[in-house]
Image 1 (cartoon, one colour):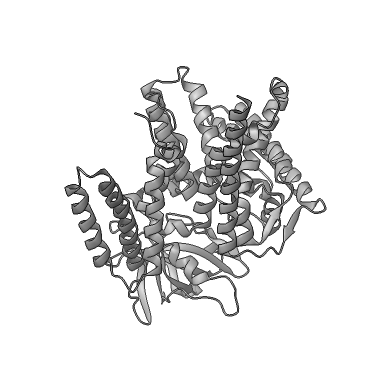
Image 2 (cartoon, rainbow, N blue to C red):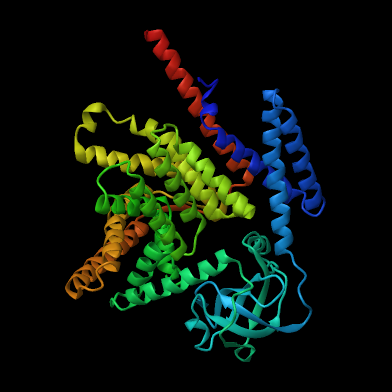
Length: 506
């Protein structure tokens, strides 16, 4: 059956857009419209959609309204769970650490979940540094006594820290002095199965990080390797972080589609030869999701894992037009699980970059003459450049909006970090599965050490070049929206102009 437009090829994309609309509405009207009202509206449109079976247009409209009200209902429910009533004054509680401590001066900051209350909740803890705090690891339990305060902004700061904490699920903040806490074995029975699985995975990640430390790497080399392979970034210095940001290579430190695609291809090449073997796809997808759990399930990695899962099983059916639908499916799943992810910078950049790659990669790649495509190195170089240009076109407004920066040498940076990061991920993979072979471990350690050092030095050099970045950019939300509208408007105009030119030539 033919569709009546290109948008009809991607039905889930439209549902995702209405879900996003509902999440925005739920946040805007939070405190004015209760979750009961949203839920009642959702039930009404579902009933109407059920009775409108013979009226396709009405049923379609009701389906879109259903996803809008679902977004509002989920958002209000999530905000209600975050905005809990906190006890007054000091009180004693048990908690589990869910992030490695980040040391800043005399303070170690980490995320904890209070587990012994009627409903567990997340707290951003600042702990006075006394040697014990910086040695805390994800999965360890503590017993503490302190005052819990609602998230608030810092005086004179432009950044809305309160909103940031709430959107990331933090119900409170607290400060712990030396005598306010101690390590303890606590019960996790109050947590959900998913939360307990995450904590167990983070504990396993700590063991892998210990193996990295035993390699004898330089502190910053270890920090980059830990960030790339396992998503642990608290060890990186401010200078190294700034170098990666200025050079436009920050994405290589965030677990994303590039990392999971490399792992997917690696597993497929090693264990299987045929492309559409059901067992192969199932085992690879299970391995991908195990890795995502180990690294703490960051949004970008979850998005990539969902897309790879959809891609794996749709390929078995030999279907086409899967890319945008896979992206939309992953967005719907992530947002239904946690609608506040919509306001996460990593979520926005991850989805926008993939969206722009899916839409603009082929047109940009098509600019290379056919003669040049016959040269393997030129073809590979332009493919990488086309991906980088497409992604940068999408994320540049967001980077300018949130960080006020544009990296001028992002293409040059990607020519360095993408090949080297591929070598590093392959090396980490083989190192994990050759622990019984000391000689191989020694060789792999040397290769990894040299590769990370080359990448760090290359990134630092690019960041030091004159004009490496434009800082102090000021963009508001309306300007960002207008940028995207302008880009897609020009894209549509060029498509229609190309069709008209083709008709005239014919």
